[in-house]
Length: 202
Image (cartoon, rainbow, N blue to C red):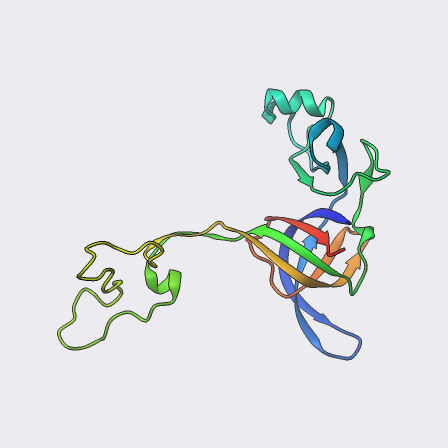
């Protein structure tokens, strides 16, 4: 499985060879470094741990500082796949992906705070007449007479956003190896600067 880490930049347009225009999201994929290899014999599972970016060493926890030794990566992530012939210290760049390839991307969506049912669930709200004054955006009835309780799973106001979103079978429109840029077809969940995990479908 091929994988890398990137940060969301902005949305733009991409014109394909046949003249069609596609909405696209630009991702900045700086090279990642292998920091650890997890194996079934020693760890109970197979994974590749990678680090990306740089930060002050003082900002790392003592455990992470000891684990990374001389490095001070800003992001440390694991990808559940067989290590293969990779070694600790190996670098993975965005050139492992190519134009037209189908991938799976994961990121955290924008946080919207505490929201009502109209924004959170798309409810239509109450009528705008018949003496209604302060209940236009309220939930309405939330229970039934007989059981005297609210059913589990009832759609209610609450915290919205900040969820991990995974999008499958997303197409790569273009790859700029020199500048470390990947152009993804369509929208990617999250704000500018959000960390995006990119994995091949194979």
